[in-house]
Length: 288
Image (cartoon, rainbow, N blue to C red; front, top):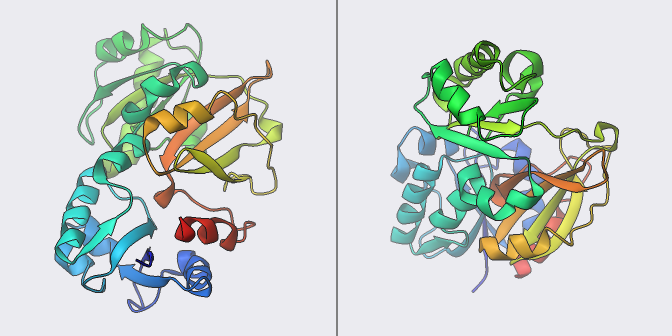
């Protein structure tokens, strides 16, 4: 059965793909694949049936490429599509495992910064004592704060970087600002991570994996002109054990020379750098 590419629709022109993903739609059609459209705004608002109304019944297997979806809503999407005889090739369980740090961290512990987390609701900052207990199992020194999915690295000093994990007041101040900026979009809870000294001048590599094998290595979208070539020897068996079909790993080089996994993600919602021809990703993906 032919695989269909499910893309987010353009909010202003719902019968077209979102401009961010239009090139991927064109690449899919060039490979003979069908393209279906998902109303992402309706989906995240909880209007699931409205969101999938443009997906043809009997569409069969689907790869999604689009904006991030909360894991719980992804499960609702999976169920709604199944009712239309269409099924996502990444299950809701697989999506959560790759998309949220607690799902992948234990497997990647040896190649990623030490981390600890605390579930909490949006707009709720844990008290200084809770944060101190969270930090106490991490190596001494600097750290960063994020939620299960995202950081605020573009507000580095005020809402991301923690110069000293032992400074309870300073940690609480930065985490409070992070929570405030995330507002309703805070996902899962608070994650504190040890800070790795990286060779920032080299940039990050984004490696795209399909069925446990590296499919493509690109730049990270934040540094599209830098594309290091990471050694994947230590990472490949971990990706295979994760058991998720289509994932990404962002890797950067530590100042001591080791390649470190900065993030793991579900590749359906990972950004493809504008400098990358989408055919190089979608050709092999749709043929799988």
